[in-house]
Image (cartoon, rainbow, N blue to C red):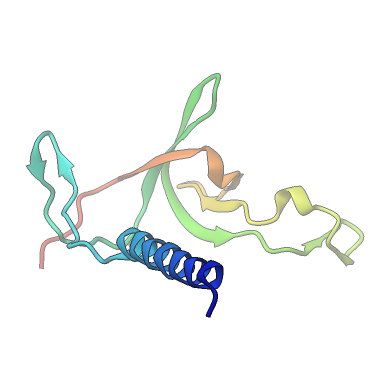
Length: 128
């Protein structure tokens, strides 16, 4: 084996080893740290939104903030929309996947989900 070939082989092995070590350190599993708030560890309990309950829905955009009180989240709009003529169409793509809220008086509100800032329970959850 020529000296030049040996240098290339050793250089390749060295570069490969360094690359492997760098990639391994990037993807190595580090112990999961609990999030902190105010310097204290946040409890690890997970919560699920109960969609059978009613919430105050607070919306924000760059200009203002508004609130829908005592609303029940029904779901999202679908990809197809029934037009006034009765036929279904995909022509309203901008309204696909909007959040559908039922107000206390039965009216429905359709909200762009990106504007929902937070949900506030109307009544506290019962303790079981």
